[in-house]
Image 1 (tube, rainbow, N blue to C red):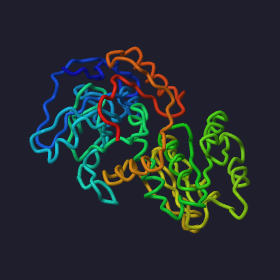
Image 2: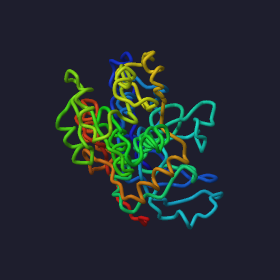
Image 3: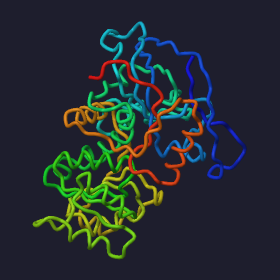
Image 4: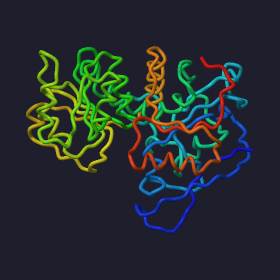
Length: 365
């Protein structure tokens, strides 16, 4: 049998509701075709999990386990798996999305990319003890990562990788580039920070919390400013190293007035890579951005090829995702899990929130 965490339906309007968590016991799934059977050991939360409980995310369902990010050990394989011995006992990270294989432009599936956890679009979630998944959608977990760190990597790691490396590009996010990361503290921004520092960029951050700015500096950022302060853009430009007058790239998850700010902060032809719009679903495109040749690029998640590239980069450079808190307990500890959700809901975290509910007994490569 396999325990799994779901949300339970109650009557209330979207945005006003907060669906309670529930635990269900399901039959242990049997892998078919090219599927692997994975015994999950850890999973991490994302903002979408809170949005699902508030009915503010597309495709909300009460019939699919929650959770997009996770790690586990392969304990079985379907009859069409090409080399089952290769996988047996291996610790693997699950790609949270399906429908996007290797196109640099976007998902090949006309429906678009579909994410694990809590929606009708993909019938799997990582907050369960066992799940089956196609062998093409997993990668071996880097040996240097703990289970909690491996579980923290997939969604934010892939989103940050595409926004920084793929969309901003080598010239604007590699060695010697000046990169601004907005809203530091969230999982995507922190993974982008890890990647950019490792690639040799000079990284700066914004936050409303001086504590979070200092933590980012401790992780390798050159400095940061409080975006609630008057004239923070001018202050930020004075922090740039000698010879640099503007930023090469801005990696932004807020939207809102991001283009207006980018006109003041970016070089001519600089890149504004937007992976979210938490401030507003609309973002005015100003004529100043046209005249300055600002390149605004939307970015969301990434392909499986990019997922593998990201994990390989993490492995090669021994990068550790930033963890805010790890809850080590049984999957059925809904009270403890609710506390993690509350941290996410109130924005108290700096890094990922993880639940460990098993131990890896397989090899760590």
